[in-house]
Length: 125
Picture 1: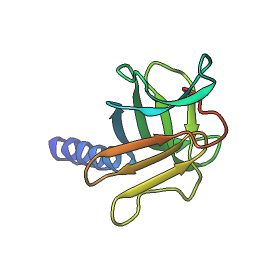
Picture 2: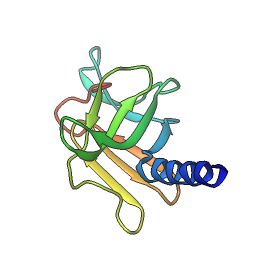
Picture 3: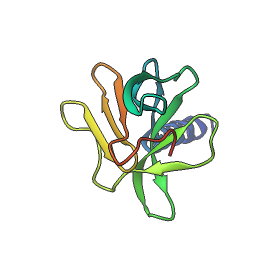
Picture 4: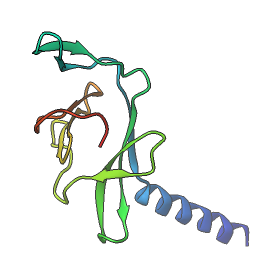
């Protein structure tokens, strides 16, 4: 009985680790861009306050898609953006997910970049 219980525990642990989602906590430390100065009627280089910007990049099973997908979620928000089906880390550890915004990540040095290249940049997604 004890051997059977131990075998069951090993099987459950092996199954759990094989379906476990991969996740990365991404904490922003700096942001720069442009803002329009109405008085000067000109664009200026601006630093944005990102002290509260934290994101989670997670690979998980999406039942409605019937596939594993990377999702990008701002901590504290209910909605998330889903990357394309073929988007994944390269052999060298680089990742790119394009929706709005575009997410770049390097798994080797654990750095990430969020870019809003379309039209006027906006905060959040």
